[in-house]
Amino acid sequence: MKTFFKDKKKLMILSVMVLLTLVACKTARNADGTINPEMIISLDTGFGETLSTGWFDGLIVWPIATLINFISQYTDAGVAIIIVTALINILISACTLKSQISAQRIQMLQPELNKIQQKYAGKSDQRSQMMQAQEMQALYKKYDINPFTSILGPFLQLPVIMGMYLATQRSEAVINGSFMGISLEKTVQGGISEGMWVYLLIFALMVFFQFLALKFPQWLQKWKKKKNHVKEKKYAEPEKKAGGMAGSMNMMMYMSTILIAWLGFTWPLGMSFYWLVSSIVRIIQNIVISQFFMKD
Image 1 (spheres, rainbow, N blue to C red):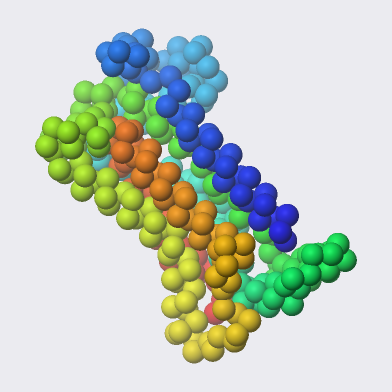
Image 2: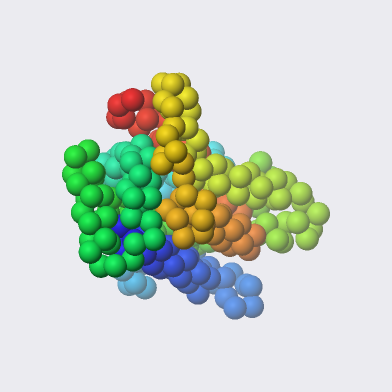
């Protein structure tokens, strides 16, 4: 099991590295900040034209930017981003439903996993580690859980996040449009420097719902236990030490929130809209899965 969590940490590091490379991706702006017309995607931009600049541009960025451009004809660019974000998240959810159910089941089994961990606490010999892994695998098999499927959702979202980042910077509707008079191309940092504190409000909401979306499954599980009058045993208490299972999960949660806050301060406001709506959709997904796919 320790190997599994080490792998998840590696996945988290990989995700951070991929997100950091966003700043080096092809946007519609030149190094001096001026707009490069050749990089703007409009409704007249053909699929083949965008594909010629790279497969990622053609297969991921172009469809998202075109959909934003199309919807913005009937509303503003901000609402278009919100609608496209909701549609993308619904599609991803349909493809990763089993992964999300598996992740929630693992949360339900956390007390039993803690019991096994405490049983082998302080035992670092190879035999004890193998026995611990076998007992955990047996528990997963009993409840039909594949712990590795829980990484499918985040892994699938990475290219979409990158695509959305580029689409919000290259979409003609976003570059020339706004949301209730607010420029979506401007960064939070730029908006605040000009005294437009609504940018700070949107940024704060994005960070808040990002953290809430990560923390919500834990709160939901505690609520269900309280509702069903489940009495926690001593071994069910989460580990507080930094190297414990709960400690590792919380550390990843805080690190990812800090990362998004740091990136969100310098990326276009349109991307903040995407992240804000995505976080809200994830919270709704957790509620739906808990209500209709999980047994008490």
